[in-house]
Amino acid sequence: MRNLVAFFAILLAMPAWPQTKLSPRWEELTAEDFRTAIQQSENTCLLPFGIIEKHGPHLPLGTDLIDVRHVVLSAVQTEFAVVFPEYYFGQIFEARHEPGTVAYSTSLQMQLLQETTDEMARNGCKKVVIVNGHGGNEHLLPYFAQTQLEKRRDYVVYIFPLVDSPPGGPAKKTTNDMHAGETETSKMLIARPDLVHIDRANQESGADLARLKLPDPLYTAIWWYASFPQHYSGDGATGTRELGKYDMDAWT
Image 1 (cartoon, rainbow, N blue to C red):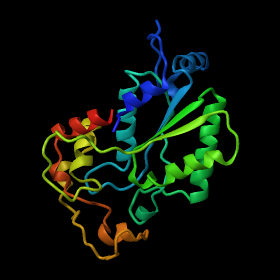
Image 2 (image 1 turned 30 degrees about the vertical axis):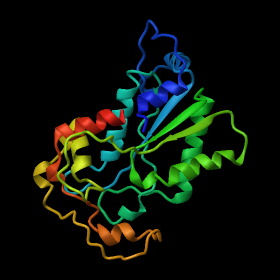
Image 3 (image 1 turned 90 degrees about the vertical axis):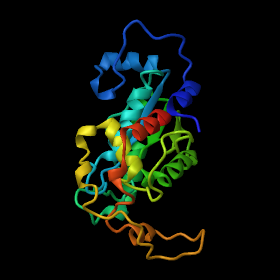
Image 4 (image 1 turned 90 degrees about the horizontal axis):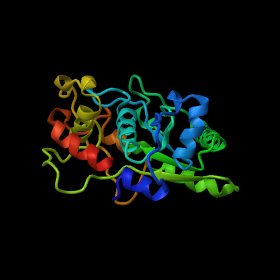
């Protein structure tokens, strides 16, 4: 799977880095610098898409948002693009019972994302790359991209989904590792180690309770709660910086 830098290189046709290096962060640019940044990026803008949800007993609520922005902001140091401000208005109904989770209605999720990409395009972003950082958005975002064919638009939406790291990295200690476990804890040890409370990782169990038995490939939305009612899958105490660096570098 291509990483972000390789993907952006396909979209961009930049002859050279300009004399004045601009911030890639949309919110940090002046109005005049924004115009220059759009030209420099060849009209390519990135929308890192996270979520606000519980991540076990030891990781911050904004883990997915923090991680995806860390990767995107690293990638644009190699291939310049304008990065939209923090965005976390996605699908997380399965965690509404947990403190701190922010779950917007389906209609608002779709309307807000459409108006956001429309506004990005109005400001010159004719290639909008939504970079997903949250597993709960993996169905939402391809559907959103498909709805862009409903009417003619003057811009294109691309979805960069979650990707698996290639083989060859540090050996993992766990197999049950779907949420706030070894992998996500390792990534946060790179993105924001100051927010990782590794000593709390075993205060709750991330074991799979497997309370719902369905024949493959039958699907129902309650499957996640049936397996992981505490919104924790794995053992965050096994996370390491070595694994985190390998995964974050592969993602970038």
